[in-house]
Amino acid sequence: MALAVVDPPGSPKEEPEVFVPPPHVITTPCDPWPRPYYFEDELRKVHPYHYTYNTYCKQRWRGRELLDIFATEFRDRPLEYYKDAIECGKVVVNGKKVPSVRECVQNGDIVSHTLHRHEPPVTARPIGIIHEDNDMIVINKPAGVPVHPAGRYNYNSIVEIMRAERGYDWNPLPCNRLDRLTSGVMFIGKHTKAAGKLTDQIMARTVKKEYIAKVIGEFPERDVVCDQPVMQISPKLGLNRARASGKDAKTLFKRLAYYAPAKRVNGAGPKPEDERSEKEKARDSKMAWKAKEGYSIVRCLPLTGRTHQLRVHLQFLGHPISNDPIYCNQRVFGPSLAAGDALSDDDEDVISKLSKMGKSEVAEAMAYNDEMIEEYNKRKAEKMTGELCDVCDTPLYSDPGPHELGIYLHAKRYASQDGKWEYETPLPDWALPPPGVEGPTTTTMETDPMKLVDDVGDLKLDDRKCKRNDLGEDMRPS
Image: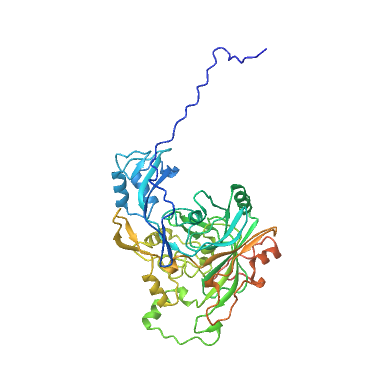
C-alpha cells in the first residue's frame, strides 16, 4: 500500500523559489584571436582595442556617488574622462545609463565601463621553461610582466601570453604569485587538481623560497634577520611600509657579493680624488644614500609572505633595491630613503608624491651613483606625452625605459620542505660580476640562507632582531 504525506490542517504552504536573473550588463564587443600583439624595440605591444569591464558593487562602494568611486579608485584616466564617460553612457549601472554622475551605487549593482583600451608594453623576452610534465609547468617569469590581467594590463600578462602560445581553450593556473616587476620561478598548473595541491603546500608554508636582489651599498657580510612588521599604506598605489602596527614579517638575508665602484676594483686601492664641484658636494651631502659606494648582491629568504616584504625590509635596512621606483626613490622618501624608519607619520605626504610618478614626473629610482645613467633614464622613461588617442582622446604614455621593465629582484629557487622537489634558475645577468671583475657566477653553499634555516631549525628571532643606532647601521650581534 502506498503512503502519502499529508500536511497538517492550516499549515502554511511553502512558496516555490523564484529565480531572480542578474542585472543586464554590457559584454565586450570582441575577443580578438589571435591576440593583437606586435613587437617593436624589443617590446611586446598590443594594438588598442575596445573592452568592457563589468564589476559588482564592492562593499566600500555602497551608497557612494558613481563619479566619486571612479575618481578615488582608478588612476589611469583624469577625472574629466570619467565624468564624460558617465554622461555619454560609456559607464552604466545594471546595463542602463544613469541620470547623473551623482547617482549612488547600491549592493548588487553591476558597474560596466566600455573603453578603448591601451595596454602598456612589456618586454619581448620569451617566458622560459624550467620544467614541464603532465601536471605542471615551471617557468622563469620575465621581469615587468604581470601574472594575471589587472589594471592597465590584459593580454600583456603571463596568463594571456601563455594562452596565446598554447591555444585559446588552454587555461593556465598560476600557483604562486610574483610582483609585476619581479622575475623568476613560477608554477603554472595544467589542471585544477595539480594547481590546488601545490597551492596548498605554499599556503601551509611547506615550500621554501629564495630570492636574489641587487642593493645599494655594502651589505653586511654576516647573517641579517629583519622582523619589522609590514603594513599596507595605499592599496591603490601598491605602497607598503615598515610599521609596528603592521602584519608580522620575517626575512633572512645573506650577502653573496659586494662590488666596489669601478675606480676601486674589489675595494682595493685608495678612494679616488673627489672631483665634484662645491655645488655638487652640497647637493650630495643631503643624500644619505650617496655615501653608500658600490652595490651588493644579496640572497633573501622570506619566512613570511607579505606584499613587497623583501623590498620594504631592504629599504628599512638602508640597502634598498637599487632600481626600485618606489622604495629607492628620494623624491618620495627623502634623502634617507626611509632607512630605519618605522615610526614616521608622513604617509599622506608619501602617497601624494608617489601618485605623481609616471604622470607629471618620471617614476625612476633616484639612487643611481652614475649621474649619466640617471639622466639617460630620466629621458627614456614612461610618462604622459601630452598627445591624445585619435579614437578616444585618452592621454598617451611613452614607451617604458629598460630600467622600468623590472627591478633587481629575482625569485631564484623554490624547494619543498621535505626535499622531494626543487627548481631554480641561473643568476640573472645583473647579479653577475661586472666585466673585468672577479666574483661568484653561481650561488654557493657558504651563502645559502636555506641551509642556515635547515641547520638551526625554526629561526629564533628574539636575539636576531634588526636593531639600529642613530646612524642607521645594523647593530644586531653576529
